[in-house]
Length: 261
Image (cartoon, rainbow, N blue to C red; front, top):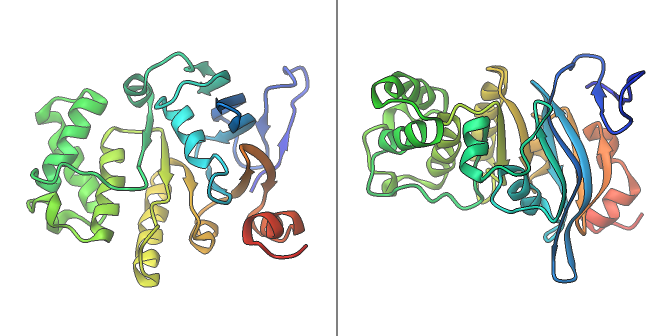
């Protein structure tokens, strides 16, 4: 994993990632969202380099999904900025951010249950990325192979198991052709063996060059994939660094896992 630093002659709010990653793909700057008196996101700054995998953890209500919604455009920030490849996309609606290269999954998979698995991907590719139906066919077939769904391509999505629904949720996000893939608790509810299978699939997606930011409560799944962990609590970033260092922090252990410091 690289180390974070400020380059000479750069704006001090700009960050660069050294020792392996060089191109900043995503940045959030003082990103904030309030629901009444609740600070769901409180001045969050972080960056993700192209090709990197970053995990985000925190207790329930820490602001993890709110952060994803702010990045993907499902929520409008009260203040702060979201930058993709150095361009401010804070004003863009969710579908335009998708077209710009941000794909995401949701905690609860909600596929078009009466469509086949393949047709679900086709919808994502055509409407999320603007491909023609003919041009999307081979792309979707490749994604089904990559996500382990090729044998289920022609079955209705409503008949899938939970693991298969999770795979389809990732596959639909990938069909939009993302530069950045946001995974929101994709391993939740799976058995240990199913979790291992899913981790292997996510590793393969990352090996193909997709940058990943992954929210997850199942920490051992995260650390099998990510370069860096970020910890949120009450809408604020409280820790960031190498997974082993972060999970060894007394503050993180106390806040996230309920263990005495």
